[in-house]
Image (cartoon, rainbow, N blue to C red):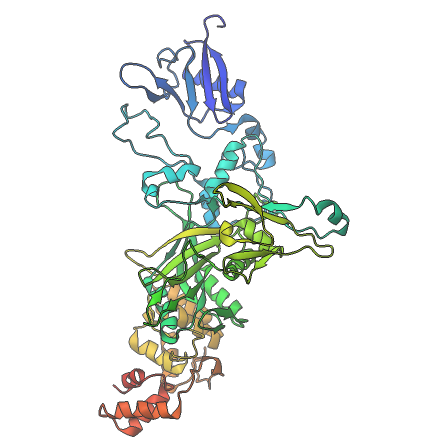
Length: 610
């Protein structure tokens, strides 16, 4: 021992280090020595020591800065713990010139010009350490803490009692990033998005034997939760399959927000407010997207309403001979087909997340994919997924494609010419039950890239769009076509301006009357003002059977072939007329009602007659 000084061991994530200090020195002096001698900024950190007095041992916080170590019962050889992330003194000194932000030593901005998503900016400002209440095992004073009530690190969020019920398989992206920064306090954390293919002939011969990728299961996810604002969104979407037996797909629009399942958590929730169904070719077993001429208009309307494209949804439903929904997917067969995985990766690459810590200015994607498939109970169930960043890179660089051998297998592309593609290796059990590394020769399971995402519906829904009566776009077969008749029905069934609070109605109106777009958006977003003139324009055009214009004049309309349903056969029309006549209407009335409703159904014609 040096003179009358005592040895205090300081435990931090850098390890255990020693400090010599007199027992008459204050706690404030101990913090200064830790900062000066060990290069750890302890000024804003909590110091805790194990109290070995009467009763059980417990952690006690050294919170009296003017108290001496003797008064706080800190003895020679005691271990003092830093209970929250430190910022290295060196990193803090260089912070102004090198961009250290957020109070974390590993945080350094590579691209300050990159505008990150609002939810990312909010989460970076959070402390991230999750508080825990005191339990029955906490035998200490109110101002003390122990291992049972000590705040949880962001990357240990699964250990929180509330989240143990959820059985989290992945931690939030920002929690994973905090872990990297915590483990590297003196060095900046840069996120890389490397290329997976060599396109240089001079490097081809040298790199051919060494270029390889080992598949790793991603421990984090960019979106932790998908919430549909109303179950009606899913019900109306699935109804297309119920009516036709053909699969359906659509784009999800909404916004991202911080998930507050527990205080200070760093998760992200994707809130879905609307589903847009683009032009598509539908089959019994699959669906194919077509080129959408209205994509820019849809994006513009969504942006005006405070929404963005957050994901993609599709159905994969099968029935047996009794017309009951059957489950065709599980962990023993496949969860997602390789074609679906390729499409998911393509969407994620198309909509990346901006990131100022990435070497490329973007990292990963918040784009989610939602599958509606059959459950073991015979119901249509919803499941949400993402693909790992590693898989997305492999698809982006053309390294992998789907295999025709099995729905769950991916195929590795062979090197050709100047393009050198890597070998793909993965770890799995062999025939003896041991975990060994295999080479994809040339196929491998797609399960290594699948990231599951939680989903839910609110108990007390308050959707952005509360009206769900207008016909859905691009459903040509069985629904009433959007047009003057549909506008008339929309105004008749819903009061103004509530009738405008319908995503599909707004979408149709800005297509046929783009000059009215701003007025429609203002009518929806500014509920305090009532556009009486807009109501008059809609009512006048609906009664006249024409499309509305900004001046209120009657427009002859537009080519609506893309919206028109398929005309039933002559025999079917005669049968429909007969059914209406049997209910007491004349044959002429039946013909007029069916013509006005485009021969969609008897029920719709009766509604018009009644």
